[in-house]
Length: 235
Image 1 (cartoon, rainbow, N blue to C red):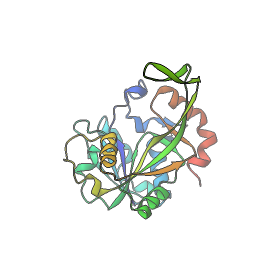
Image 2: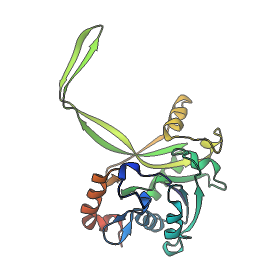
Image 3: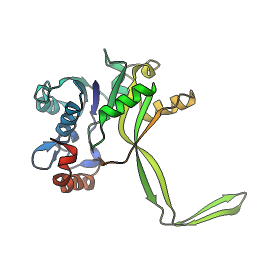
């Protein structure tokens, strides 16, 4: 099983932590970086090869990770000379397996990546998206209007959404229409599939998930890590 980890972003929202370190290398707890936790999880779940798509401060990631042998992985690298979006770095990768995992390098979760990939393969899906339930509280009275008249009213409703976790399984055929070297976002890929009537698979997940995008997310991850360590890194 093969995984591509997207680790090329500048981590602007996580400054000042990312001023001197790429976001995947910021420490969690006293022992691990985010990226090391992810690599240990992938190895324990049967993945054998990983491609790291790097950019900002990518030389530090190369120096830290090396060839991946300490985790029982074979790791290679793809360097972005300019930002290519979420899916753009995949377009120039050679020898990708028919189905593979793609994930952001700044996620803490106990999602079983191997099960996601197996479910994706069994379904024959072009794209499978790990999704998470989010509730958004609206602090206003919400009106639905038609023709200048109020038809519905809800006082401070809570809206329920399923959001992308930043973890996907992909069939390489869906990338064949796009030009290597040009940016390609996750949004563009999904909208193109929907326009074609080719429905991505929803892989619903209700365990632990934290996207470390902002300083308060990072502080939360460190505060929770000791309690979550047995879940994130089972022996």
